[in-house]
Image (cartoon, rainbow, N blue to C red; front, side, top):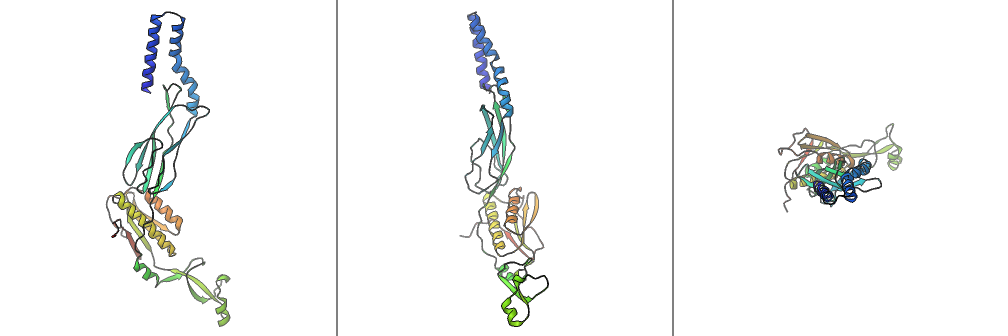
Length: 305
């Protein structure tokens, strides 16, 4: 904008020199037109400048390593006015905080949360001499890790083979226990062949593993590669426990404190991971001390292979 004002002042000075050298109505008309041009431009442009709206177009969540661009959607009625914008992208886990321009790629190499802020968005009049700030709201993008397989815990599988409990609400289960019919039992659970054989109304009660409080713990401390491995393994192990029809708890030590998040299905696991990704990193690497029947701490060390 400063360059445009300098060019305008040069043009205005040229008109003054022209008027001094050639006295006449033409020189006066040219000087008058140049003198009032900025204000005419402002008056004509101001309604469109005030009605201009900008919005960042970003996905709410992406996968780590995906190619996603930062886009700005601008709505201007009738006329497209000159614009200038700049952005800043901050990654909460890697600590990167860099300016960028529109159409730049998001830093999705590592998982975490990217805070996208519009540092400036200016709409100019037709001549580019006046501007109006129309900054859009900041947005966050969650970068989810890819599941990283890890060895299945043998001690958990041994515990599962020894302890079972009735499944709340009934339904499908791989293990069943036979017992006599009780008031309130569903007729769909009746074992009709055994009932006909014994003469006693018998039901097949679905059973699920009972291991007490199962906890997956993780500490949000380390460099970006370590955090990628920790969160990828946490996701994989969470999906594995859900496949065993287990309800468990995820405990994450973060810079915001200890997060204790109950997991009952895929949706709660997804929500818990989103909350962890949006947290600040922990200052030190430590294992949360919890009163759990079975606890697995997810580390970020490289694979032995």
